[in-house]
Length: 405
Ligand code: EPU
Figure 1 (cartoon, rainbow, N blue to C red):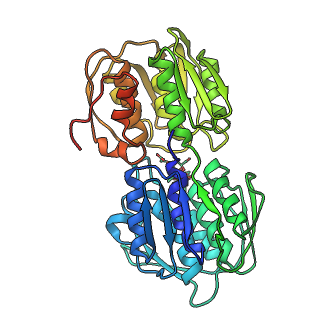
Figure 2: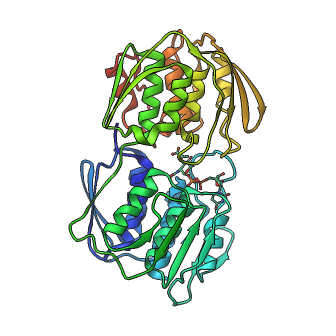
Figure 3: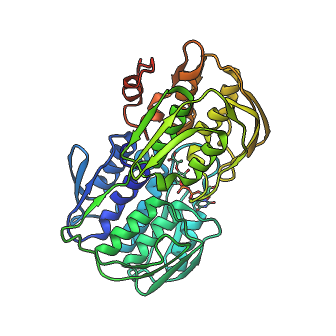
């Protein structure tokens, strides 16, 4: 398992909180990282890359508007807002892009920064946030939704703000905890890490003073590999992962009847031929991650009985099931947040357009267990979050090859 995309993507913006250079290890080779690297370089960061280690220096950083074509590529561009606003007193950005999973507004970000003393204007294409030459001020913020991106960007802004910030109903994903713990080790005053209430006392720019950031293993890669193992392997050993970050998924696999065993940094999955249906409901961490919902649904197509899949987070994240239906899955769409899966059903290979990176990987897993050949277009979306999927899966014995970009 490689380093987590959603950890690496947030520590690059965090480099603007530092007065000295920041060394980051275990960064995955995925296209979202290339885009984030380009974005922070446009804002004056100097990024030196050596394989999976990056050294970032933001000494000559600036608050130029985020280039439209890069910011529109990924949702995580929005996380850069907080550090830039807190350090330079202004930030300009277009509405962030990313996977099309639903509306994905940024109201929580803007409202929170307004509470911290910034003014927001909009000119049709760009949002501009400015503190009018003042420092950003600490504030008591309640997030109506435990948003990952909002928690991260507000936490980072609060590290350089004047006074104390509370983030209540904060998201608690392991990637946020890793970032917060590192910032605290470098001098940030953050309390409540891993809980829904963060208390942050602002201060000067941080100093990494020899601390190196280590990106945590990708729990979504690990989880997807476990599902692949359950469906297609006699025995699959998943190394360099943290099973503690996968408790909700492992509980589902257990109910479905998947045979697995755990070590501190390893999962061994032994594939079976009879699985039992179980209903799932996605949730913020530590619940079942929305990002594992699509591969999990593929597993449920092979389980005996009826499983209700309830996606609470995004209203557009079940459309991919239409292609699973074309492959032979028995799935009924109940509404935009719920599908009913009846299994087991035999899947057969089809030609499909991957709608986003997680559903794209679910199609790959479905294609591996299907009879015949599947062709998955939009492979570049899978590259956003998974490194060399075709090579890694073919090394496991799957017949899979990359035929074009
Ligand atoms: N939301 C608002 N207003 C806001 C912000 C969020 O209404 O201002 C809503 C969203 O529309 C969504 C919910 O809050 O319905 C949760 O969204 P959140 O902000 O937590 O998501 P995110 O930060 O945009 C991150 C991951 C996603 C993952 C979600 C949920 C990154 C780069 N992205 O997105 O990952 O699905 O958290 O866990 O960290 C992926 O990696 O494939 C991916 C989509």
